[in-house]
Length: 248
Image (cartoon, rainbow, N blue to C red; front, side, top):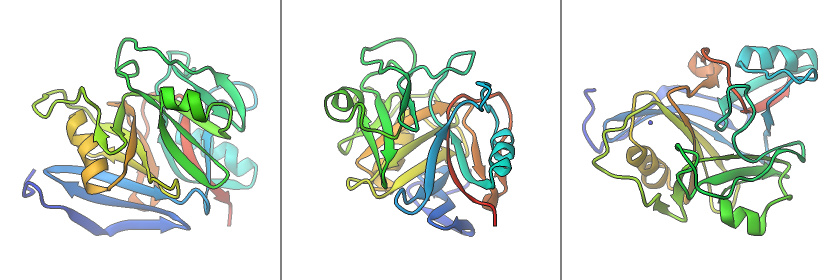
């Protein structure tokens, strides 16, 4: 992340929704369809979730929402937030409420995660940042209330990942997050049809104007956006990024 004119962007205004500073909308760009959810980290309660109090992975949006409601809260937005092992442990760096559950993996490796440069989504204290992993180690490690490492980076300082090929035929449903230069916007995107890495990164950079963006996953990508009628199910997830609020 057809009948649309190449290069034409259409906003499906009737499908747009907002809850506080969370806004989800559908956009078309260069023949591909996306859902875009914008979060103001200074206005919304943005968090990462992995396990419940017994150590069992939440795994699904409805499981998480049920647990939140027992605490007087509700889920406003959710998305899978990084790659994980079969037992749902994060593949890369993971921090929840300041507690490190998985160390940083700085070196190249197999699969999309190891297609360096990869990066870390770090947020808390009203600011959200996507940071390339080696830069993160030098400048931000140990300073994030929440952090999840994934890869590859989609956009690095305004440039697409150097290994993305315009002519690639590797297409999957994909999701990820981009952040503004000031850290006042966290923009989550999931494709509605299969896209290449080059197409997905170009959407973040050229359409959304974001200087940094990070890939979360593909094919198993999930979204919880009730205003758009999305509460995706399927395979059990690992890390989940979510916006929560008190039950009204």
